[in-house]
Length: 143
Image 1 (cartoon, rainbow, N blue to C red):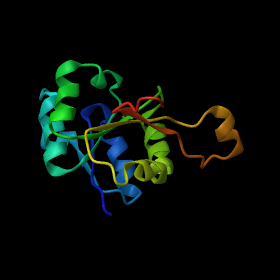
Image 2 (image 1 turned 180 degrees about the vertical axis):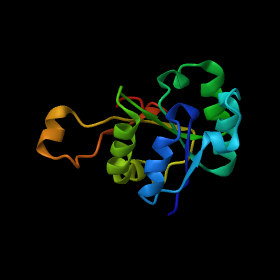
Image 3 (image 1 turned 90 degrees about the horizontal axis):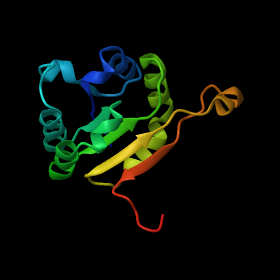
Image 4 (image 1 turned 90 degrees about the vertical axis):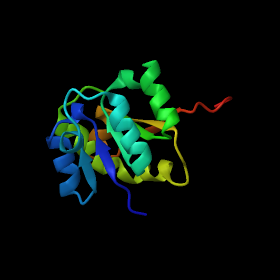
């Protein structure tokens, strides 16, 4: 299944460029929206157009109107966790793509996944180690 990913403005131009170089189909916020536009606008776009949204904004899942937009438009949102240079975040995304798509498979939105980078010790064992992917929303009771 071919997926199209949408990168939030906080990921700039380098992140989507690295994804595109890895043959990942990507739309960039700056190509479709004005910088001062609301997050609800691009979240609606992602839900309506069935794009997988990617952000580095950790707060988005805690801002009531933004979480409501994720729910209302049934967005599948990936939140990149951790402070790192953009190129490192993008490289981890590319290496973790199989895990990400495995978790996405068969799941409709609304869905929020956290995408972590491997630990330094994991990277010491293998520089190609993918990151960890966890479901953040909806929470599964008892899990």
